[in-house]
Length: 294
Ligand code: UTP
Image (cartoon, rainbow, N blue to C red; front, side, top):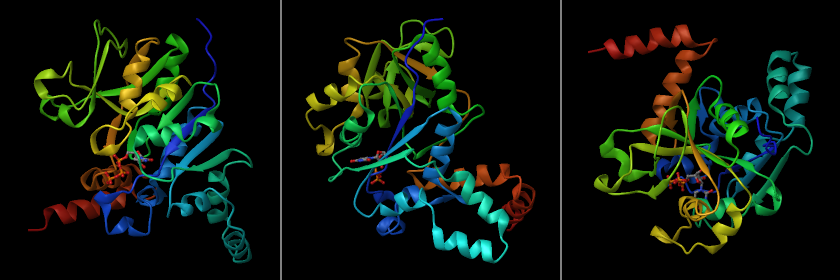
């Protein structure tokens, strides 16, 4: 098996405005909304940790300072919990705390699009391949989606994007990939189109929120002109990079919940609630009661 540089760093773009969740997101970042009892961003970090990521880079924006606080030690809270003998709660906090120096934060000063947010992390990533994780897209998978992608990357190298099937009539909302020969779960991508018309879509496989990218992507992003809505898109930069580097699609096994939309967020809470060791059984009963009410 060929050997490729280890993926050590993950970038989490969290500078979006979250307008679909107003008024909730007026003062609370949408990444801090909870899935059962964990903020969406924590669930994404958990997935990256499980995949062996050692450094977590957050591209934040105005009003997102609470995300930085979430990954810091809360000294007064911990002292109070200790004084009250709440050692289980303390242990929960300890387990999630990144080690000193394991996180970096930079700001995207204006929400100029996902591509631009990724570009803001260029100095922190440096010259090595990295993972890009969109925390909105919650993947319930075992092993995690990023772990499955790193396995594919260790075999093929290059760039890897997570893909999944959607009904053909939905392709126009996404980046869509095409391939010449798809025999397994990982395949070489020959075409990529952002939000195609249904008749122009090369397949019904969409790019779904996890990427492993080579550092040359930053130069490609820098060359992009703002597209729809004045935003700089990551897909356009990947299309340019495809001229000189290989891209692979990794059709992971698992379920995606788009927590950037209200319906996806509600569905994720139901799915994670039902799976919860602590609450699953009781939640199922409550849910059935609600569903059976006339
Ligand atoms: P979305 O397309 O969901 O946009 O971004 P949004 O602004 O967060 O939410 P809505 O559409 O207004 O409700 C996808 C991902 O890209 C990040 C978001 O934080 C999210 O993780 N993003 C988007 C940025 O970091 N900066 C941007 O300029 C745009």
